[in-house]
Length: 169
Image (cartoon, rainbow, N blue to C red; front, side, top):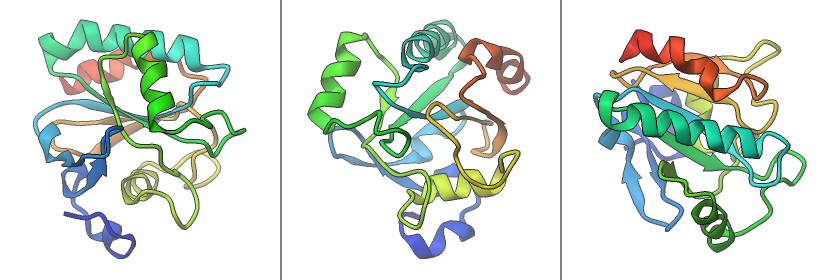
């Protein structure tokens, strides 16, 4: 598994990575093999939070069972300090909002200590102004082969991803 700083560049797909769930369990992202996925950095106190959590939940409800959509959300506190809580606080927040998709441990998405998965995603789907995440709720669409095929900024509503998702289901 690719989980160290030194070998993210060698990864062939997201399946080469591990990540810790919000409960601290290290899991292989190989569990998403054969599924179209959305990987997103989230924050509980952002202006985008309400709309994005609702719409991501709707996408998961609509396509999770019928098309195999998986959503991997990674809390991040790098943007305006908008995810200040610990894992217990984040768990409480997502329970209150009836989140059913996968929540991972809080990580950094930028900088030297960014999670290796996010380094990989940014490298393969760079942003308009560079290979960095600009704000909360940046969304990557992953095809059934574990390849990042599209990137959407925070101002793109999750519902606007449907046409892209449909291409890969």
